[in-house]
Image 1: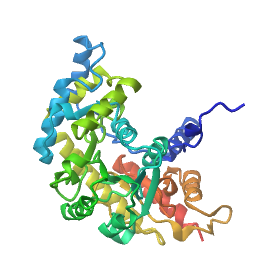
Image 2: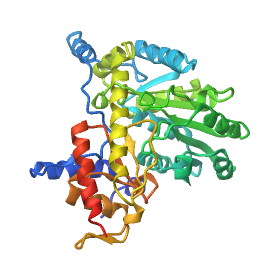
Image 3: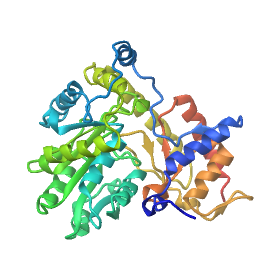
Length: 397
């Protein structure tokens, strides 16, 4: 007898996590796998942040925090938004959660009712459409084009809006494409949304500080948009703190209260120890983040040069985050004499088996012509990975 609920039975497994697990399983068998599947900085958390976490243990931060997070941390987040983004929030408009994914879940579950439509530009991060499904919403996926750097255009947005549209999910810098929206591009989208006052924006800005084209821009900055936008961010990517699980959201007070109420029932506040470490990182000198950004830019260039030597493969140059999203569709139907690859999943499995390089099929991101590679690993591993990929792709005829 099947006891699972329909909402869970209809939920897809994260392809990113699945490929990461396949890599770990092969590594456990002694196979040298270069894992480019998971989006996680390979840098260690700065020492003074680690010390803050240790001090929190010694200072007995072992009790429940407020469900919304510690007030001084929420004040630090509000200050970050004002100083770095020019966005004015009170601490009461900030909710600290167990990672940015949790913040996204809070926002979507607080906004979306059964049958509400949510516009999701593709390629998208794998979790977006699953969270909308969990909320009972309807995903309206817009397949963006490589010639537009996989960015949503105002015309595409306007065409997708219906009376049932409740929200737009926007990610910049983007996972999986690395595309970054300029201020002018965001203003053009905001102009469309301002003509449709019933639509809310969920802006995922977790890769804000991994940006190779200058300052970060948020759609919340434009007149009339602050009260219609929830900004999602966190400490995982910019401060190499993925395991600390601290994300945060900022939005209108009514939404913050709703998310606080939901979080109070689901999880209560996030880890007290991790919150003290997050406070340290948000009040620190930003030199570590700048140095990491320089390394990611160098790795981006290294990977793009390596991919350019693979005949038949095309890739839009990313301007942020730490992913490349090459189009591998020209290899569909080709064979190395033993294995014929028919689609993106076959390509990823072929590369894992033959090149010992782990990637993620693009279908989970809404673009089945592509695969995603993370370059959040060492230069040495990336050089070896590019050589192995070229050898494996060159065998496909």
